[in-house]
Length: 158
Image (cartoon, rainbow, N blue to C red):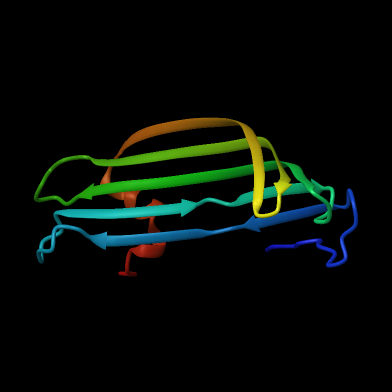
């Protein structure tokens, strides 16, 4: 969802604010060994909603000096579940990785343009940013019964 608040007749020092929000999720299951036997299966689930916010402040577009400055923020809250299942013919345990990756990013930016003479403009700009990522990881060893209960939406009814 993008909600720009932009005034076409923008005057000096009017802020422009942009926000966006995205929610996405997906699940997938497959028989990965490509044989008729139940040897290797893969299941995955992803949910990664994100939110971003940005504000610009500028002095308008007239005159020989133009500038813009602003702030930006982004947050992504990703949750991931991956499972590799081995059938009875392999005899190995089923492994599951359950992890969450949270990303937060802040930045400040600015740019100035100055018309030195006709057809010659000096442009100077800069950006400072800080990113923070946090990872929580859990690895489980499951039995065949646990995997069927965990992923019941992908397992055919018997």
